[in-house]
Length: 151
Image (cartoon, rainbow, N blue to C red; front, side):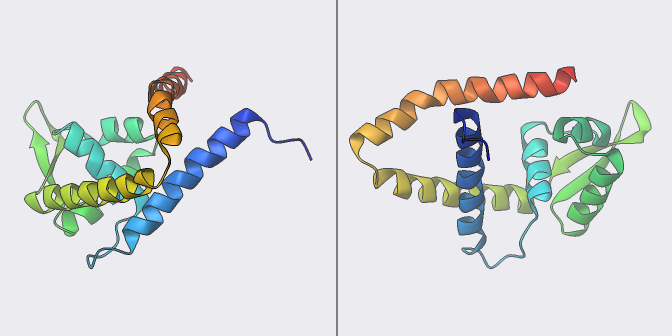
C-alpha cells in the first residue's frame, strides 16, 4: 500500500469534517431529513434566485433529469417554487419558499453553533492555524471549481 500523501490526508480530513458536521446536524431537528443533494439545490437557489433547472444541473454537476426530480420533490415538500421564465415559457425559474428560507436559516444557525463550540475547544495555536488556512482552502476550492468547468 502506498503511503498517505499530503493530498490524501487533506482530502480525507475535509471529507471527514464535512461528514461529521452533517451527522451531528441531522440529529438535532424534528423535521424530515433532507438529502445532501436537496440541501445543495436549496442553497444554490438561495444564492441565485431564479436559476433555471439546466443551469442548476450544470452548477451541481448533476444530470438535468436528476435535478428535475429533486425540484419535483422540493416543490412537493413546499420548499421550492417553480415559476415560468418570462423570456422562454418552456423554461422554469426556481425560487425558495418562506419555509425553505426558514429551514436554511435554522440549519445555518445550528451549523455555526456546532462549529463554534468545537473550535472553542481547540487551543489558541490550533484556532490561529485554522484561521490562517482559510485563504488557502478558499483558493483550493476555486481551483477545483475552475478545473471542473474546464473539463
